Length: 291
Image (cartoon, rainbow, N blue to C red):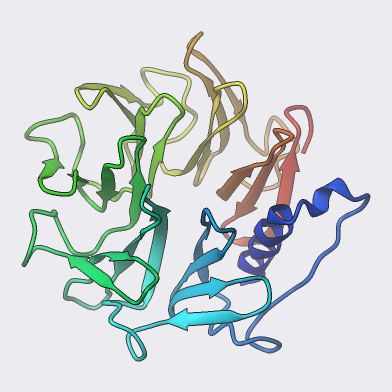
């Protein structure tokens, strides 16, 4: 569980520009010294007001730099305690994806932080499933979410993408990323990477038709030069230059990457990549030359 705490430390400290000071400074919060309800943290998001929001297996957690506040099924209208992804629209509403295990639907939720909640599942919308693993907002304020299918919501209408109307395969989707050109990128378990341009044109990348190293995409981020960086379970780290169609891969066998299971990924203002790992209590930085 330690790796989740290290990632939390990194996000909090970078939001305070602590890396401008010489040498790393760490502060650790866990259930033994704070009111964080759990060590198992799925997602971290810093909103436009500088508040840190944390998705955990015990609900949604807010941190203002001093105090942690938890929203769960016992003290709020939240529909499930497993919060997997958080995004923010142009009206400063938070969109939250949740999972309910053991049967039943959770919901895609909208929270305006004035204690007003909205919920979307198959009973009141055309969403493919109330359980959703990831959510993202594009530059047109369109909401995108994914579990086995991809759903799009423009505030009025829903569009669901699956194998009947797109190349999307029915498979778990861990990641949706919107790049600086408003292209949508989707990671699909066991298949690879999908790009949707102008909401009309699909491109599919896998190990057979591109330089993508693996097929289990965990996180996608874009650096200051427009390159995409992709972490993949069971493989390593991939860099993709979409302008020149150039790929580069780092694995434990060909580099100093310490594990083939990178998960969390963040790129800071200096273009340094920060990586957290499955199955390994390690935080790794990469400056494009060495880990």
